[in-house]
Length: 282
Image (cartoon, rainbow, N blue to C red; front, side, top):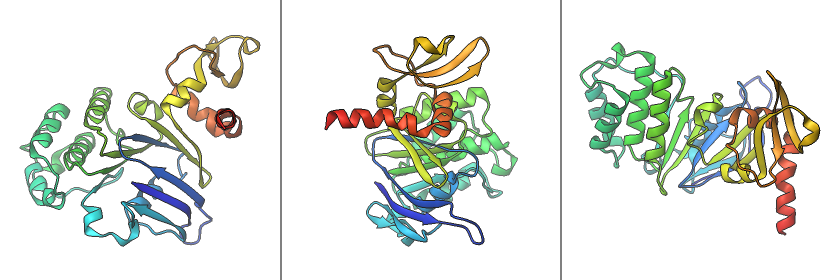
């Protein structure tokens, strides 16, 4: 669905942001795109949606160059941006004006999502709080039923109940024909819904593994004595250490924040565990 090959990019008068970056996105999966502030998450989403253009390499979406912005491609992509300005119109007017650009838009789904998010249809967009505006855009994006849905920091501005609603709605809307890419630095917000963890740092994809493979490879938890475990990464917490250890048959949920910290601070050792598995298979 998305194929990025050897992408190199920099903003004018600045050093390289992406240096020979490559990644692939497939239908039927929810990707979590993680990285430190300034790592280029938003810029990568803009390349995929055709709003920025590579200096070198290419970004292909549905086998077309994203930067060509062909109507048939744009009709199957929706972006929920982190920063946005909405017009001074009613919610229904926005839906009426913009939904025709997306042939698979479903008004029944839109009503359902708005009800779930507790967003009233009888208001003007400019009267909504930031969190309510964000929920409206998320609902609209899901109702477009585009094959590619890009979300940039979608949980920013959402309170705790709304974040729970977001996770529930995203999980229920996923299907085998849709690819959802969610960019965020709030890694815990996506722990229960993503299929794939992709981490970007210093212009490259430094980690890209499925949740299933991560849970098979590692155990996450609190330990007191590192000598008793095969520790891959650990950090101090109250009463001991939070650790990523080699999996010896035990099951544990993936601690997204701990995994992110481990990859950022020690990417080579984390990735080597997966290379061992690949070497054994071959």
